[in-house]
Amino acid sequence: MDQWDLKDKVVVIAGIGDDAGFAWAIAKAFKNLGAKVIAGTWPPLLGILEQILANEKYSESRKLKNGQELVFDAIYPLDALYDTLDAVPQDVKENKRYKGLDDFSIKGFVSRVAQDFGKVDIMIHAIANAKEIKNPLSMTSREGYLHALSASSYSFVSLCSCFKTIMGSNGSCLTLTYRAADQVIPGYGGGMSSAKAALEADVRYLAYELGQEKMIRVNAISAGPLASRAARAIGMIDSMIEYSFNNSPIQRDLEAEDVANTMLFLASPLSKAITGQVIYVDHGLGIMGRPTQNAEKKEEALI
Ligand SMILES: NC(=O)c1ccc[n+]([C@@H]2O[C@H](COP(=O)([O-])OP(=O)(O)OC[C@H]3O[C@@H](n4cnc5c(N)ncnc54)[C@H](O)[C@@H]3O)[C@@H](O)[C@H]2O)c1
Image 1: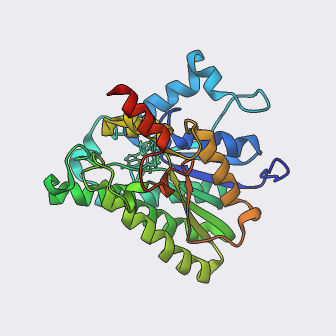
Image 2: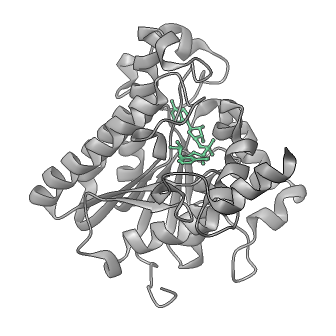
């Protein structure tokens, strides 16, 4: 993989807000191979991202393999709930985190990439949001449910539709999903499980449509648990990490780099025959039908 020269490749990552999530590790992985990396950042997190990129305290986190530090080729504001600026409600436009920003809609974001870089080769969607995440599905309002789908699933459809216009053939669109799409994960509420199920179905339809139209590949990674900002908002990430460690065939904590390396593979010519797939990067947790014997022995020891 180190031989894959990305110097002329433009990579867009939608959903970078800090150094704790998958997107940060993905950005570093592509930078390590020389790509141009553009960040699309949710306006409420722009200030945090700027601090992480400037503050000495985060210099270790910014380190690339060659000893240099991560610098994005551009950072644009992006609120993926909106396809055009016209669709943005007035109160959002006037909110202090949004006021004065250039067009932060999906169309605005894509126009800026087109204007400043002329093209995109790889588009990565790392966005999830559900305003009622703490509510079980049966207690989620229609508004909360539709918000989860709009922010977490339709955002990918819209980004793919817009970016395909400036993506050449052999481009790649990638997203991140979670096992809650097809198994019950108690606590993963607010319609997020439905959003991930929709996202995975959309990956297959987009793979068909963009593949036929432009030879663009579309894939998803279903990642194991990581203590990111979004995962902390769910409120049970530590127990999910512990459960995963105790019950996976491979007993190891997931690192964001594990997912980033698989993203590299899925964007590279090494995977040129793979499209429409959900690839699990979870130490095998998803194949288990019941807790491991190790986990059961631990339980017994506690009784
Ligand atoms: N952390 C996990 O355990 C885990 C497991 C499997 C899949 N995932 C998925 O990985 C992806 C990245 O999440 P993460 O866990 O790295 O957390 P994260 O908090 O780093 O990433 C989520 C990002 O979504 C952005 N976002 C939210 N609403 C937005 C909007 N309206 N417009 C633009 N951006 C918006 C946030 O600013 C944030 O940067 C998500 O799709 C998540 O569901 C996470």
